[in-house]
Length: 422
Ligand code: ADP
Ligand code: ASP
Ligand code: MG
Image (tube, rainbow, N blue to C red; front, side):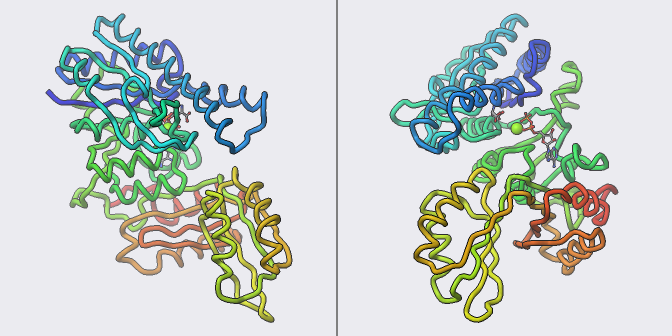
């Protein structure tokens, strides 16, 4: 009798009919003798709808009182879907109970809209499981030590599910979504993308951090830290498919390389439109400049991604970096008011119409020439590379947003990702 955590995303919970389908699937697992904890997202579109209402009343302000209320609001989406799922389970004849993050004891820090889970108290859930109930726990939300409701960032229900699986030492965490696994790239952009039967934890971590929204990055971090067996699979298969067949479908996130893993040099392509580029022009080229600029940005809690500094000419240089697009205006404002006056730089220019495209693969560790092949492919398509960043298992380029899909498709083909690897 295994302890299994299921997570169902917004599309999978998107209507009462789909919720009934989820309930039937969960009931099947419970009847097969498993102890079941289920973590649903809000019904699709609901979180956007709620946040849209807030925006109508007040434009987004990155302030604590405002963000506290955003979390109060957004958390209701998951509360509703959890209760609906528990009701659907009961009508399938399964004993079920739903809990919010605070009832369950999902303790987080107080960073509203992007809180981090610190502790999970699973006593109440264990008691229910012992009593033979299926437990439904809201995704996406927690509570800080003062009792304020917090949320975990967009896509955060993945993290709730994996964190609960880690805390409860679940035998497996199954992330049910609207695709049947992790693909070589987003199948919405490249129809020839292929599902991977397995992907290494490190590659999944890079893919998620570089923009593949199929799993929220923190869920992958939790899975790595606590070695949670994690699988991404479809909620759109018939609910009554054979449970053994279902249990091995989708994509398994693996922690050790094994001989059955695909041996491709590049395993996947990730992309992100959430980027904006800022260049500080005519900066005096002397020690401490990077710290002067980026220190101020970090102090404002703004995350910087790709950074380049150009060659200096006449003692002056240009310094460029990218930030999340949502932080663009705040960063420019900060630089103009706090940094430019003391830096002696000439000007600041920004570009919000950029994107980042990345190739990812642990095979890049042992192969040379992978990045240069990427640059060649992009040059053959006439795509100008504005910035480059590399690590052991990925190369990212910043390019004009309008070439994003072209770049993804060209790279997908050039690295043979549409072909089954040997
Ligand atoms: P959910 O609501 O179930 O959490 P998401 O929309 O957050 O679903 O994530 C699933 C989506 O992720 C897919 O519909 C797909 O468009 C997108 N996606 C991006 N990159 C990938 C990838 N490499 N493999 C599979 N899906 C991906
Ligand atoms: N409902 C939240 C969102 O839309 C969390 C999630 O779906 O994972 O971001
Ligand atoms: Mg998601």
